[in-house]
Image 1 (cartoon, rainbow, N blue to C red):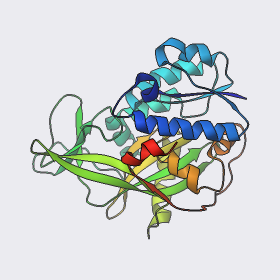
Image 2 (image 1 turned 90 degrees about the vertical axis):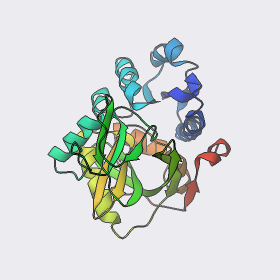
Image 3 (image 1 turned 135 degrees about the vertical axis):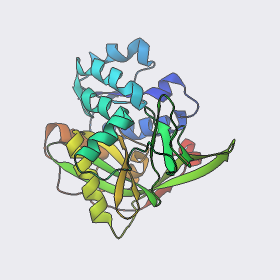
Image 4 (image 1 turned 60 degrees about the vertical axis):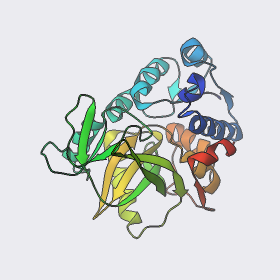
Length: 288
């Protein structure tokens, strides 16, 4: 089976994301190779992505959320999508619409804030990698930004694979830094600890699985959680995330095998964990 595997930041040479992108690309390429697949990687998204899709059976693409819909929709016309559909990607890329959809369906999320005097997390309505996210003493009324209620708690994530069933893989602790700059407190993601034990693990995994199922997520994806008095879904990433670097180390199953089973077969009821892995962004150049 020929797999088109594409990671935008590597092809585009984006300096802020290229290390993460290269580490994810190399990990997934090895995993699909171990699964017996032939992997094709485009040199450039615009020049040869669609051309390669005509030569492949399936594809898995990673790109910034606001761009992922366009590339996914184009590739879906030519080969089989191993990830979330373009419709789901479009929904999850819109942080406001995702928040409203989850809230309407009974999933705990930080509420959208409009009144003054409520501490908020302000983030781009469309964005990824915790870019441009900051803490504010009140909502910010600016085009392209949304303000959600600040939840004091642990920053976690759940890695899942969706197919005919929803399979939570691991609960992860996110390394989060709050960086002061220009009088503002920016929230920055700096890696993961996988797996992470938490007394409310069962509840957290159930909330993440319910959110993924309700949104229609498929393939390998991640859900970010802040655990305060309960688990709150703060972001849905409709694509592989950097946690895949740790999954490759700690799962007793090949991640590519699971992705293929999700699309063409039946997922197991659970997967085993064989170790522990923690990394920060500064480690990513050494993960390949």
